[in-house]
Image (tube, rainbow, N blue to C red):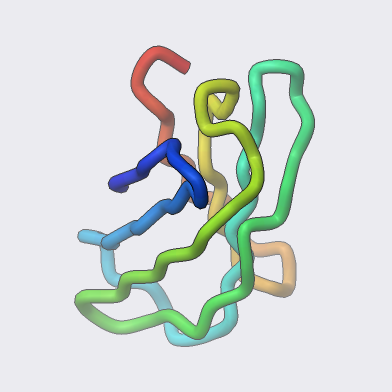
Length: 82
């Protein structure tokens, strides 16, 4: 995961683990426990990646969660220092 906390802030994620093909939801989680949906992405197979801009202050974000749209398993990427 790569991120930039400027204006606009952005996040780019590459997945090393192969996912089943489908629609996934990415959510940011802050230190306070608040969540903000980053976006919905068609992912799957090898070499999946996605990116987005956000208005969320990335200094307060502790993790990014990725789950399939049906509520399946959650994959978590933790922000350093989070």
